Image (cartoon, helix red, strand yellow):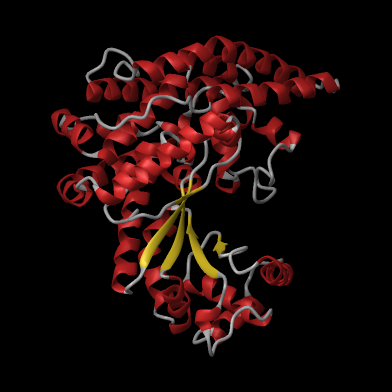
Length: 469
């Protein structure tokens, strides 16, 4: 490899304390991958996704390790059965994705692997970018990164396969998969797409054969339409992109002012949501935080979104939008929502998540905060932004209430709420008891059951496919 010396240097001198141990673990994993390929064939394992990619050398290290276990031969790189794929997750990494991928494909060996396969796969993450900068900003940065990545692969004579790391909640990229595919930038689908389905989404969408068939039909239909008759996203992006870029910056500023710059916000979040109980119950595949730190920055994005959903604030799915559009030309924004699938899907997803939120229940969760002066101050800011965003969505859609233009989806959500709301009240009481020192295992079990029940009730209803405004 051209960058072998650089990669070796990173392996030996990376400042992270556990990096050497992680490298040995990675090598063992790749050895196991080689055994799986030998046993089950070349299609068994196709891609090695590199989380938190911020440099081309992160990917070249993979090829170096693949060489060490006999899966990569520098003299014949096109025979490598596994492709290194970057995962761009944070706002900063999404913005740097173009030069990072461009640098990777300047390496003859990496380019040869991609040429042999015909595509370069790239994964883009919704959860961390949302946690970084708000729903609006995350959605826009993902859109722009997708366009930038397509430019790189086109220049290299490759096809781009985007791997969308979407979760169940809107704050993690959830919402209508059909609409999401149609809102992708022109040329980024082209007959190929890869999407994750995680957590409660698996049971909700694929637990029954007929429901699974309907969801797979919607995905296939979306890919066909986006490939054969793509909406004119490029023209609309040129026309309206500067407006959304301005809204994105304003949304991110409002969001970060609350989450990262408001004194005591971390204390409020940990007391007014069940994040502590989620971590204690160990119901996820990984710890809720990357380190022992209590800072929001070190919290994993999945429990961040999950906690706000449980407390019915749903903050990652809407906060910042109301402040962003204040003072904007609403006629232009309404035209954008009507004509541009990207912006229309953004508004529809936000409208859906707001329909599941409940500020009255949010106030009850805020009652769990020991410092009620702090709780009142932060809850007041959240409610003020809620009012701004609620009014902005209604102004954009021309409706009298949320989901007024989507009666079937509205009906399905309303049918669930009488069953979800009692679970929220039970959860609040059980959390209060547990935090007061009640170690009764039935309290712990009750919290777990309430978490599961609320999550299932708030998952996306299987509604009619939306194909237009």
